[in-house]
Image (cartoon, rainbow over all chains, first blue to last red; front, side, top):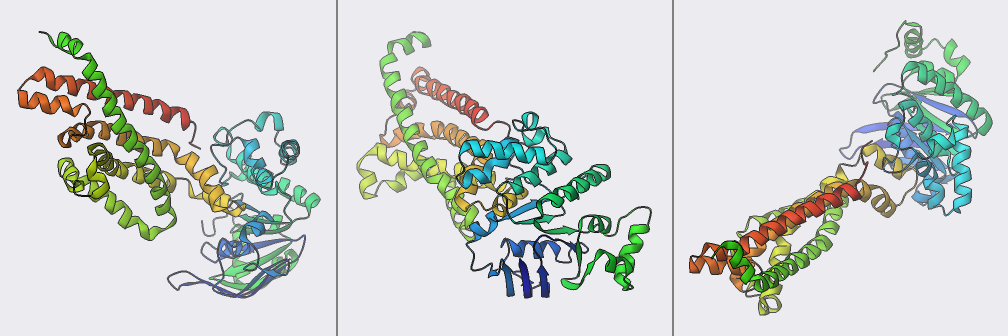
Length: 248
Length: 213
């Protein structure tokens, strides 16, 4: 579904943010990119929807290099959720969610039905929330809307960049659970960036560990928990510590 | 003869010159908006045009207005008619606040909003027209308001090159050493500036509501 072949990404100034990345994401899995701040997680994500372009190597989506895709078409097949959500403050919640279907030329009836369906799906009462503006919502509600908006045109792929990182711990746990049950039903191909080991173990079907722009390996949950590698032991120690700050 | 009597006696001329003044200001603002907003948008897209365009507009603004009118005099098509020339000069003056506010307004849009818009597959045109311009509208209108108020004032100097407007009274009053004549130009000009400020301020609040997250 998504494949990285020997991908390198360097900034304009020539500093390598990613080197020699080889990675495959299978349809329907939730691959977590785990790593510290600055390890190249978000960069990896943005190479998939071509917000960034690889300096060397190839990124393939559905078997085609992203450079051969029309970037607009590519992005409309890929839902994108970021930590700051980025809802359009001048649009109502309904219009935020319905924007992509509108750009895709769906008739208004179908659009409205879709917005309703999505709001229900993320646990927000459509009649109450559709006419509201983003500023009237709590952080958790906004992030739910962010997820709904990313799902609007039913994309096969979902990219999530620390989507729940700004939420309080209780809301985060709640929304992580909702995310799991949602994914149970939808079976999207998801790449999920986080620095939180606890979150990685909850949401991920597979964990890719990044450190200083290099992929250290990919692990199933069981492999990860049983690994003896020092860096993974450090993550697991952080998991058992009473509080969790590893890099934040 | 009191000031009011004087105004009443000359009401026909006052209104003619006020209309001329409005025409000068209106035309130059129209041109400044039509030129300034696209330039402001351009420099949000092409960073290297930023310095030359903002710098150029800045330089125009620092030229003393009387000198600017003089500089334009020898230009072939412009020099033929004083009002064209005045409008060109006034447009130049109004550009800076409009370009600058368009630029700052767009750059002030929350980066995460822009990232989300691009990430969901909006074209640059859609991003601009549906997200950036609506969100920047308040700041852009504030620029237009500032430019208009400045232009109402500077336009009085257009009378020096024979372009008409309320400056006629001011210059005539100065040479006649008659305060009433000066005031017949200055008071309507001040009222015009206040009215423009008020109306555009209302427009700002109407057209740019609730843009804060």
